[in-house]
Amino acid sequence: MLAFSTCWNNSRHTDGEAMIDEILELGFDTLELSHGMTIAKLPGIKRAFDAGKFKCVGVHNFFPSPTEVMIDAPDAYEFTSDDRSERQRAFRETLKTLDLAAQFKAHYVVLHMGSIPTMPHKQWTGALTKKLEAGEQLTDEYADDKLECVKRREKYGPKYFQRAIETLERLVEPARRAGVVLAVESRSKYEDVPDEREMIQLQTHFADCPEIGYWHDFGHVGLKHNLGLLDHDQWLTKMAPYLIGAHLHDVQWPKRDHRVPFTGDLPYKTLLRHFKPEMPLTWELSPSRKTEQILPAVRLWRKKFPETERVPSAG
Image (tube, rainbow, N blue to C red):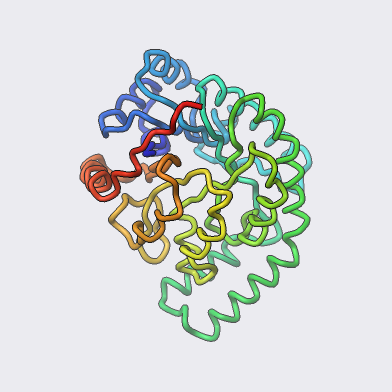
């Protein structure tokens, strides 16, 4: 099932209904209400929803954005933070998201679980990416740096992973009341929580809990594939039992994600075999992408992959 995220045009609008109308003109009537949304846009979004203009397939935490956060910052508060008050704030803001998700009859809520504070991005994944850009991915120095990154991640990860697990355990009942699945998203930075090994542990831990599943991000995993941290197709094979949907976008070598499909390097035909036709494939594009770039890609996608148009059956 195809859907479209409001992250593409949220920043260009002050009125929520006008934002929705612009997406409808792309040929989508099923939307994900994304992070970075100001409270001021909610009345217009609600008008459009009540008028039957669109269906809400999912919501991305935090929705709406915390009032004091003036930019689009889904990681403004982290469940893994060393600051207990920040962890509590992240939890409270997520409860607000769940309440709104229920109002919009969403099926899922996408969650970022946090990161490891002792591993600054610029020093680790960021440094590897710079070497990748310079064409140094086959050098001994790159291999040594990647190994050191993995070793440090293994050393410091468990404490923060446990915080993520404890948070999800507290969110299961609120998610059940809201009627949504907590969609734990794959991330692009190796310092983020969970990493791939932890994601498998997390999904195994909640294997008997229908309120928690795996949310695949094509671009995020594509970036890790480029870094040599995983194989995209093999990773999806492992995660197929837990898969509930995905953010769809493309990757231009080596690090530009949230590109329009078919403008990058992702092998969609190979990767889509892991998805059931009724699973949401939510286009999550950069605000810099233009309408004239998106429209032909949508037409081509529907021609090449018509099975992804299937709508979930009721119930």
